[in-house]
Each structure stands twice: as C-alpha cells, then as structure tokens.
Length: 165
Picture (cartoon, rainbow, N blue to C red):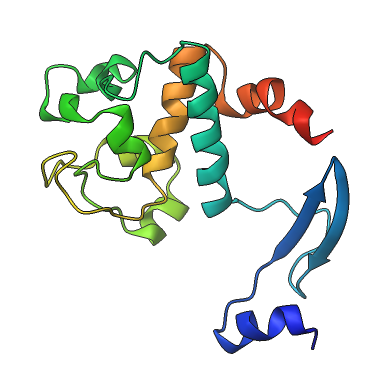
C-alpha cells in the first residue's frame, strides 16, 4: 500500500476520488474501487474552501458590503426574524447558532438548501461555539447567487476557475 494512503486506511477513511491540480495541470489522480474518473460526487468539505474564496472575491468586488452584513439581506425569508442577526462573518466562521442538521437528512434531501434555511435558531449568532456543518456553506452559496447574480458554480468558473487553467 502506498505510504500516502496508510493513515487514511488505518482510520477507515477511504476517499472516493482524489485529484491534485498544480499550476493548471493535473499532477495526481486516484480513484477507489467504487469510483471511476467519470463518476460525479459531492465535494462537501472541499466546497467550504472554494465557497470562502468566493465570498472573499464577492467582498472585494463589493457584491457583499462587509463581514458584518446580515445574511437576511440575501435571504428575504429571514428578514424580520431572529435569523437576521446572522452575519456573513458568523456564516463563514460556522457560528450561526442554527440547529445542526442530521447529515443523512441533508444528503438525502431533495432541496438541501431549503432544509438548511429552515433550521431553527438555537443559540445566539456569533456567541455560539464553532459548529462544523455541511449545511451552512450552502447558505453562503445562496449569498453568492443573490448578491452576485450568478450561481456559485458559475461565479467560481468566471472569477476563480480561470486560475486553474
């Protein structure tokens, strides 16, 4: 077994796909027994990094005013509710105060974004502990959609994707 995979196998973590791009070129690519290069998978944690880069770019381009801007400016259903206290900063630091969604429910949901948007506020935004969540970055993606007028994936391709070659 290659040394680079010993730790992941010891921890019973088996990535389905791995691709490494450097200077616009694919320098490494590997697939588990369960996947091929033609399979599409949801990136989940990888998307968090790209989403934060998109929010940073949207801030630079003034589609988002600043980190203190309310997410409710982009999610009209949150206006006039306690969720109005959730800022871009709290979204990006995963300190929203939103109830955690069961990952199985999220993964199997027909409308994943709506499932996350509908979560109850169970803590004070910004004062709660960091809560690693796969749902909250979906809200950041919606901020990009509304604020920039482009779906997050299109904004990524237009503003950052060119950097990959």
